[in-house]
Image 1: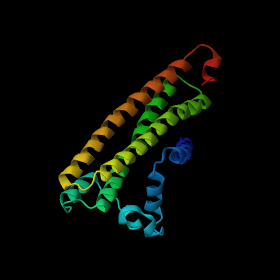
Image 2: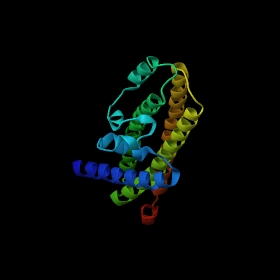
Image 3: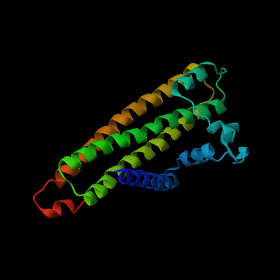
Amino acid sequence: SETAGSNYKDIKVLMHDKLIKDYSETAGSNYEDIKVLKHDILIEDNDIPYGCEASDFTREISEKDIFDIIHNLNNPVPFRDMFVLFNNFHQNERKKFDEMQDFLKTIFDDLANQNQLREEYKSKAWTNISLPIIQELLKKDSIDFKFLSEFMKSGNCSPDEYINFINSMKLSWNFFWNHIENMGKAMIYETVTRAISPTEESQSVL
């Protein structure tokens, strides 16, 4: 129903925001800082690294445009451009998380409905499935920004070298999405299978 769908979206946002806050505080991820820059252009420009300005993070740039921009950068690539373009690339990859989560939720709902699982059980079960998936995404955030930091510490690079770096990150995201899909499906099938039982208690313990 429309109400149930809205509730799912609200819960997903709340869970996601809380996990980002908790994980960012412990893992050193600066994704929260970048998100603030994208939505609060009043932040002081001198608080942003590599001479970037807050407005650098408010643009939406497609993957194709990112590579086109890199091809036309100066040699060596300015650190500012490296940082801004990486964050645009990373944000584009991150958008796919909602698509993946919705895809897995559809699979879960179809199986749950086919097996007539109770709504209360379905809600708790999906929360238990979603949390590890979100945690994996936050770990990926932290790892990616560490890779960026190490790459930039290595010194100047040419546009071709920077493209190779972005391509390596792209490949890592492809592996990541395969991992998340397999992980999510395994948890879904395990959760639904555990609930299919002649005993009433099977859907009361998660």
